[in-house]
Length: 328
Image (cartoon, rainbow, N blue to C red; front, side):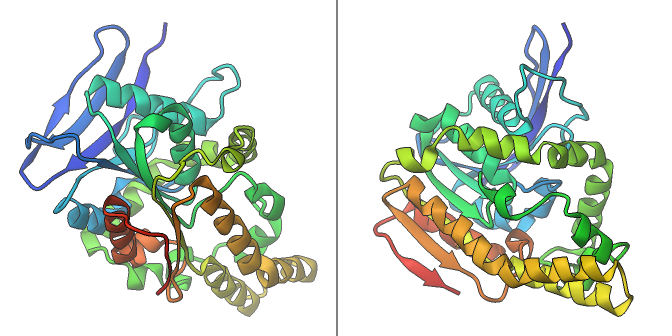
């Protein structure tokens, strides 16, 4: 029997933290980093980064939240500080289900109990909602930021050959201003870049399984079941289409792609924000106690550009009193 390599949860809190290596005697290695404070049954915040991202993209959120709550940042297998590992076919399970199951096992091994506040960005929302399916009774609330949903493939292809052709070899972070406006230090940005480069196989695996994980999540009918009941849910929508408008315009300047490919990319951009709002608003059905937050001055990477928004919504979930709508 092969070993199961569990990802890392990096945990921080108000006091000094240390690294704990707590292997399963039979077949697994679990690594957790956490502080020494004795916590009561207060909610624990778990961060689910987006596709290809890891805990290195969340330092400002981690710093802020650790002042008022216990927080973990979950690096899925092969990403960030976790072990390199290629999933074998596990009864046709999608990568998101496997990631959620691995997180459950890691939490059990390290005896990190709920209730949990799930905070997810982009693809990480698929994993978070698979975790919700497995541990619904232990989830106290959620924050979904620029979240991928089960219906994403109806409007967006990943990868999209037309977008790929027009964007070609353009440097995404430079063109959209992500590097210039990131709330990261130079060293933090460098660490993030190195980790993303080293995580390429895992990133490719997540992209390849994109349609599968969306289909498998959709089969659970979480919207119809309103699986969160009346537990607080915040849905954050930003302006991701603006990132790709900048890439489109930069691609035009250097005449990337064919005319047909440029036109197809333009048609998608014309509908992008409408598609995005439709998909994001559907998630409000997960709870009868939900809140819509729209951020006007931010692209897709809200955790890097506007970490304060995510921190604010975590606070709202922790002290939730009423349903509201907010535009920033």
